[in-house]
Image 1 (tube, rainbow, N blue to C red):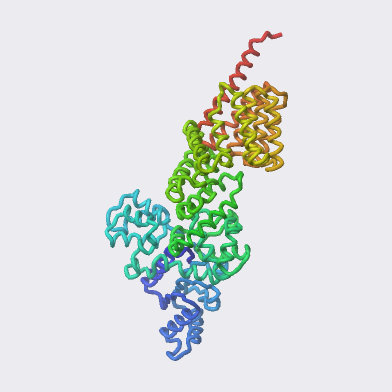
Image 2: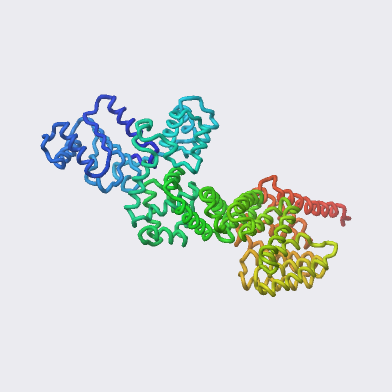
Length: 639
């Protein structure tokens, strides 16, 4: 049993085996049956029986086929039966050739049902080419010298599918192209897959169908196997996402279920999982329940996408974006899952970017950039936001509220690497917010706060406190005391009370904010945890008596539980814990904490990251205290 995705070469393997067997000259019977259903098997068996003269020419096909089955079981002569493209194992249940020492049966199928791998049958999975096999094939099939790096790139574009490689090579050869030019055509979204492979009468290697036709029957079979339309609806979403790893819960999200069950015959979540299993059995996707991932081939995605018009893409892009946003929590402790969500988002943007910008911009743009900033990848976030802003300017205009939102996120993303430009960007944004939305709009108020943070007068902190008090009054009057913007301004006011040395006032305001955030957002919300951290830092800096290491240790445990051990906020809280341990006089404990944290920073960020350098300096500082204490102890008079 040769099983695999359409186009991996199952038929070619079976044909090579059959030719080799026939070439030995010891076969009495070789029957090749393209399986289009039960009738094709019975008809081929009847013809073979007549050729062997074990029935007369007028025998009924069913009776003749029965006689062939008897002959196959009893003969002492060698035979080989090949069933090519068995799509429905149930249709052939009574017609499997018998087990015989004189006979062999080969079956090619896109299915991988458990029923195919029972008894004397052996299910062999035919995989894609390896990278080296793909490159070797291309360099041989193109018919002219091909630079290895170009062949490697093209093989990756085609995801090492033998059928795609063969048809691409034939197209390159027939049109006298090179790999670079072909790759440009392949990536051109204005062209369909049919535009970059030979026509049916020009297919290479005795291929009978194009890539698109190869998978059409499997998709049709999947639609027939479950509630009508569900398979197509699922594949519509699959074609817009990362082929290597789509989260399984994407398909059971509310937006996905609503679309799939509305487009197909109404079904439930269990129906969707059943159809995914059917698509898996037909090798159109791989649905791994253990890893909770769905995978597919990039060219299957291309074939599905080619059939979608602009209106369909518009609808599907928003459904996919809504689904990704639903399964992407505000805090994702699993770093690998968050990377996977970002990867799927970027593929979606590549496939349908314009539909997610005009007439309004989907919030998924800001979810991915917030995620990148949280992960410390400010450059990637900045690049995405700059591109988004450029496209928004052309599609919806620079004064659209979504364009202003992008500018705010862009200024935040730039803060780490270019704080001066970030401050200038916020000042420009404030001017535009006042002009477009007025001085009392929430966007204007939050931007005022960000500008004041960056333009604060450190030489006259009392003046800055007065400005924040004025802004806080405006926010309470316009937005209310519990609005997140109001609470953010109040937290900034607490910080500046601390800057002026009014620690009691700062502590009081911070606790007011913390109580409100705990009540409104909950104790595990990122904003609440950040305020808890700020309270502890203030108390430590001000000398307010507390057991700092215990408090920071409890907070670090909370961050680990909510964010995961490798999240930047968790690591930063552990750094504060190390500092608190040292401040209590335990330099050796602080050095040990820094040493452990340094290993974690290097593992998460890489050895050359700025945070690693900072932690090295902290370790050196506390280790110097340890060494100094030891020298002092060595010099002390001994009794």
